[in-house]
Image 1 (cartoon, rainbow, N blue to C red):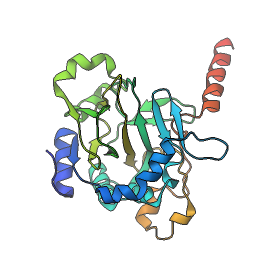
Image 2: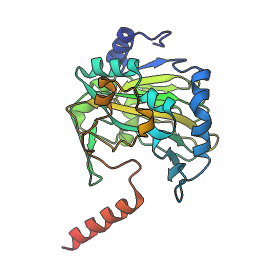
Image 3: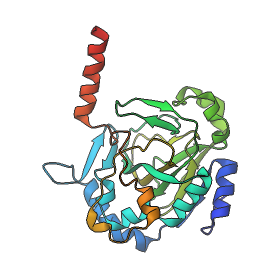
Image 4: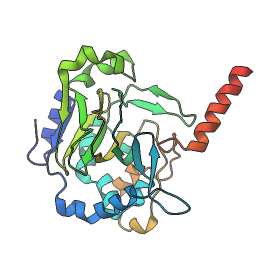
Amino acid sequence: MVMKKLDTKDALKEIESEGFCVIPNFLSQKQMDTFMPEVNDRFNRLSKNGTIGHVRAQTQKYLQHTLIVHKGVLDLYLDPFIIEVAEKYSQQLVHLQDYRIYQNLKGCKMHWHVDNKQTTLEGESKLLNHRGLIIIIYLSNSPHGSFQFVRKSHRWASERKIEDWESEEKKFYKDIVTLDEKAGTCIMYDFRGIHRAKPFTKGKPRTAFFAQYAPISSPTGEPIYIDTSMLTDLTEKQIQVLRFGRKASAKTWPIPHDYEKRTIFRKLIEKII
């Protein structure tokens, strides 16, 4: 179902049934115009020597320090409607576990996967038996790399305890939904469901906002970096979502290059010993 208005009950019903819901025009062009010039500028420059732009990992770009790009971006991560749906769906309080604004570039071949997992400080991950939401908002039209979801997979995928589902595609192919949507569209989905960005070999990337809201009893997730000048009017709920005073349980994504090299070196030493 495509929602025509913001209605918490309808969103919850659709996610419970299908594993996801789609809300067109969640963001108006006027809203996007407040922060997208800065987002686009940062995607046009690499972070270097104090200049904050983007970092690149293979066929993806990620804005560095996403939450300090613009106050409008921070406000989006703290949107009351999004938080309300996330908490009612999770059936407990939530926190922001992972977050990014990213682009999938030509040649990107993302595997089918699930995200109900814990990523450790050692860069490893293990699946968890909990429910929560991921929010994707298209910040550009979707010419390529559209979000894909295996409908109703949130009901059964977690029972298999598999993170990477690439080899199973033939078994669920008929249930794949591809969401070719316009800028401003919001997609909410159960992170236990199987999903990916549709692979593409040429053409323009899709720019998107990503936020993972997990039950507060779950591991905290990535470090949260904030510009304190944007924090003049935080509510208690927003402080909870931003995990004030709680230590991160994972590294920033993508995994820092120097840390990745140290991890590889450590594992080689362990094998030798």
